[in-house]
Each structure stands twice: as C-alpha cells, then as structure tokens.
Length: 98
Image (cartoon, rainbow, N blue to C red):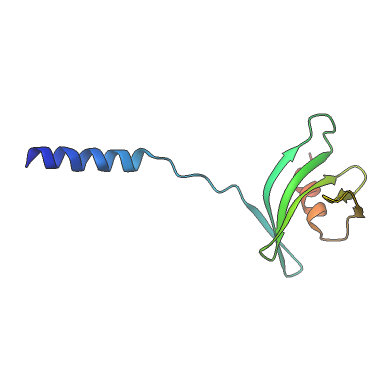
C-alpha cells in the first residue's frame, strides 16, 4: 500500500514538473484579417530585417525576409514585393519599431 502511494506520488510530481512549451504567437486583427507572427528572427548584421513566418486568417506563409528600411519583403524564390497597407510586413515593422 505504501509503495503504491509513493509511486503515485512520484508520478504526480514528475508530471507537474515537466514544463509545457510556451506559445509565442502574436496576433493582430487588421481590417477583418487575423495576422499572426508564428516565428521571427532579427538579422544581426542588418537590424532592420526580420526573417518571419506568419499566418493570415490561419493560412501559414513560409519564412520570408521583411526589410523594414526599404518596406519590402523577399520571398523564398527571391522575388521582391513592396509592403501593402495592413500587410504582415507593416505589422512586423510597426510591432518592433522602437
């Protein structure tokens, strides 16, 4: 009986001590669209650039480079697109603006 209690107690302690991963998702609503930053990394060399994966209305967009100085993004295929009003690029740059 005591052994069973000790085993149960150990299982309880171990299950509570395991940390669950934190959700680091940042979301904002822009003109009826939900834009979420799923992952983001700032460039060490070009501090005005961010590599970010975002989702728009729960549709994931792969990692792209967002250039806040030039107000454009570089897609994975190398094509360049200017930011549009209320786009993920505008959100990223305004969110991290000092």
